Image 1 (cartoon, helix red, strand yellow):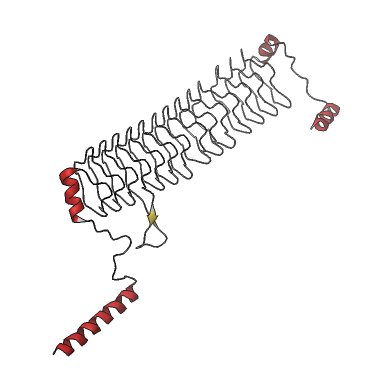
Image 2 (tube, rainbow, N blue to C red):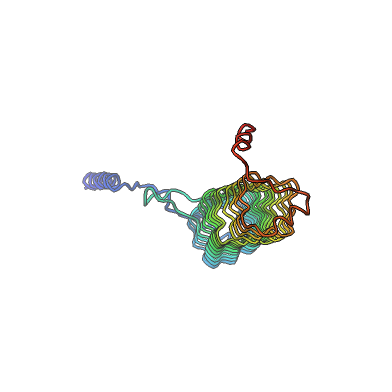
Length: 365
């Protein structure tokens, strides 16, 4: 009887292993199957002190974890939607595939925390994002945090510290990033459509090709930022500091640039037709081949600006400062107030170049 029972057990084990191999599911827990340490969960809820704890997949929905110490804890796959994590210490914590929807992380510490998306083992080829939609991260410390692919749509990140954080491929649609520090943050492929970036610090940050359509960048700190081919359509850039920024190929259709600072900015070939630049500082800016037709440049400072080949047809230049401006081959037909500006600065408008003079210019190159 014992031999028969043993044989049956062996047979069932063998069949179970075969079925596991056939279905692609092993007897061990799958990488995306989380099982928390129940004693760690109890400890956390009782003491709020659980550094390095194993809380993978824990259901902590709506939990009160204010000022909790979770440094280095593994919360991957955990559900903390609606949880109170104000001033919590989550430094170096593993937060992959976590659900923090509408959680409160005001002034939380997340330095070096990992919230990056990961491969979805159940759906090969797909990635699982950490869910922080609508979460409150205002004032949170996310310096050097790993936030690749995180869904932060509608999240409140006002005044958050995101210096050198990795936000590549992150969804930041309608997120509030006003006054946040994003210096040196990695934002490759991130979506910032309709985001609030009022007064945000993006100095010298690479923002190439990013989607800022309808975003509020009013008063944004974008000095020396790389905005090459960025989509800034219908965005608010009024009073933004774009000095020394690179905007080659950027889409600025419908964008508001009133009062912005564009000193030494690179705007080669950019379409700026009809824009309001009254009193704007373009000192030393490169506007070569830019389309400024119909733009209001009255009282703008264009000293030393490069306007070679620019289209200034019907542009308003009344009171504009053109000291040292380069206007070779610029289209000045119908420009308003041009002669006034040139006379005021003792500049003689160059006559249309003859064939020989054109040849001479070509030789200069």
